[in-house]
Image 1: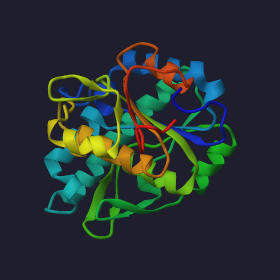
Image 2 (image 1 turned 180 degrees about the vertical axis):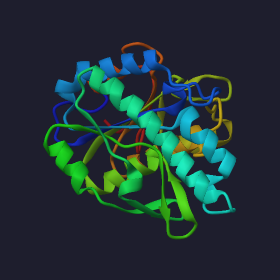
Image 3 (image 1 turned 90 degrees about the vertical axis):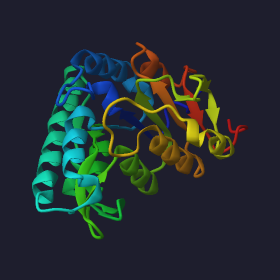
Image 4 (image 1 turned 30 degrees about the horizontal axis):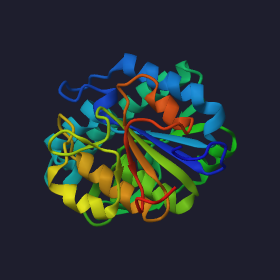
Length: 270
């Protein structure tokens, strides 16, 4: 089983931008996929314990971010305009995600990182988490997302969902992290699935990871794996799975074994 159910520790779920949007078409959500994923989350809600659902920006934020080089900071005369546009695009997708969750009777509440996060060199150094903590205490499901935040070194930075989850893991006990994308997990160059990945095994795969399609200014699969390995080193297991397969997210939330890549500190971890 991937993570015991019924714990007071957080479960962190990321809905990948390439899954919930068409990353080849600007500002194009995938409403049927979102509706199904939201329904699966609802089906497991009674057993997950406290839950935070994050999501990427997909064809909303990443396109504008690439145009304005927002991930590099305030680098030109139009950077401030770019900051505003990228934030607006990310927030628009967040409203769509929260709406789908509410439609499925998941008590979701938007949590904009730009309202409380500060970064330095693209790493979050402070996040006012008292509101998010109160949401969890009340039984709500906070929904943060990849966003543009002030950065003390480069003016602004994109705080990816992985970075948000890393920071949450420093402030809350976290039981597991589930990354939901469009592939079965980490794939070798020949397309074969890596079922279990540890730091030692990752070094052999680093140059041959298969990434996501479309524009991604936050690092794609490589960044996901690196963050999950860092979390695994602190005892938090991660799972990368394919959200295009009906029922797979629900089963993972219920603690059942599913097809995917489990990322652990060592291959012998339970």
